[in-house]
Amino acid sequence: MNKRNLLQQALATNWTACVGPKYAKLAGALVQRLRTLEDWLPTVANVNALPEGLRRYVHDLETRCDPAGDVQTMALQADTIRGLHAKVRELEAELASMRRKGGREQ
Image (cartoon, rainbow, N blue to C red; front, side, top):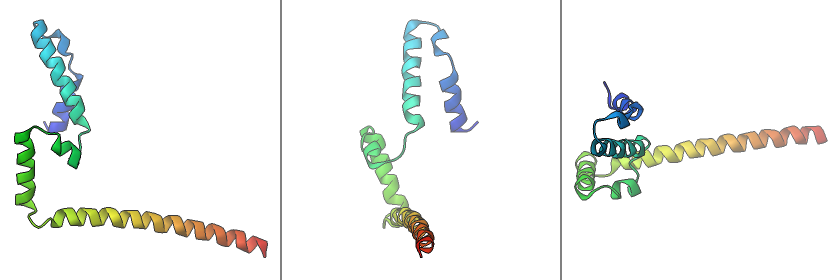
């Protein structure tokens, strides 16, 4: 079972049926935490909001896996290229529209 399925199963479980109010309260808190993590992305703000030990682990992992920052640079470049391609398509559509209107006026 992968992590995503486990998370979905935990979220779908009726934890209020657990024995004892203390256990049900803890399970409810766990479900709330899981819901917040469901759409969690490793943004700078989210990583910096992690508890100290976990934040240090993520920063150490980044340092060991990409010491020169090449992966980050390539990811930023890929985002820039996608944005530029979208802008080119937008401008090409605008140009084609202007050409069609110009052809009708002549």
